[in-house]
Amino acid sequence: MPLITSRIPFNHQHPFRPVRPATSKIIFLSLEGSVTEEEYFERISDLFSEIKSKIQFISVAEDAVHTAPKRRTPEQAKLLSKVRPKQLVERIDQFKLEKDDTYQFSQYPEDEFWIITDVDKNWSNEIINSNNGKTYYDEWNEAMDMCQSKGYGYAISNPFFEFWLLLHHDSPNNADKSFAITETHPYEKTDHFRLRLRNLNAPLKDKKHINPLDYNINNVRTAIFRAEMLHQNKTDLCPKYLSTTVYILLKKMMNMLPKNN
Picture (cartoon, rainbow, N blue to C red):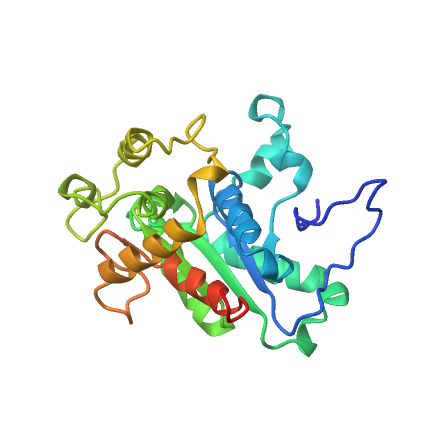
């Protein structure tokens, strides 16, 4: 099943819309989450309406994304499960091959390609391939090396993307910091950040869906400021402490806005 961009509608009112906008640069996003992350960046593209066409998603097949989980076929479930960092990079490669006629990538070297992912269990030594003994951490390092060699950007949240959402509404506290994944503190499954968002009146519906009205230009700027302050070593794009480098991507997007914003 081919990859498609989910933000290019096709219907009777709008039977066709050119994919390549009249711009010298597009930022393409390969997202780990097909719900929370995609809804958030949809909101960002609405807030940054002047550059909406310059933010494009590299998404899994739309019919799988919009099929209720209990109704998904095994093939759809398998497609949606391919969200490990290495698979996000491979998704970009496949997208570039399949969409070159549409986007003419060679004529637009300014285009940027980003993966957005969490640390989550990706730094664990859990075996994911019994044939060669490869761990999540082995594959993580491969993915980061692939990004660097291909010139792809990567926005990493430690521990989860929900931490980036939290920064729109509050500064981190000591309890938040205790969930950072470090060399001495492994990944642990928790609803801590979702509960924090709920207590701040910005809950995720069904643990995944954002309310777009909870995110505006002012608190996006606040989140960028807070994240930049937390990012102690700016050369370390995979920080092993409570942090998120999503702010780097947001700053790039904001730099594309007209200067009066």
